[in-house]
Length: 124
Image (cartoon, rainbow, N blue to C red; front, side, top):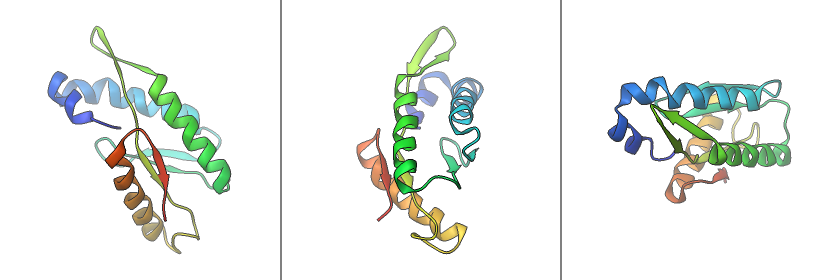
């Protein structure tokens, strides 16, 4: 999730942890359902494992997720907030033989995406 620190500063981490993060996880779980799994990996980071999508399908699906998050209104107290997401994608076995190797490539792509914000980049 992009710029979550600004929301934490505005509302407090406790409020965001009880409003936006669970809402984001529900949104993500609904999108990923029957395609794979979606997991919260850290404060504002989520990990998707999509074992049955090829590279082209995964790229299209990632854009669907990015678009859905951008159009979703997250409720925080009496206000609504819009969020964007940035992400990195990596593919097994193209980007590594192990989970850790593929995750490292996805994290590198995510760091590059965070430079621009609101995009999802595949690993090199």
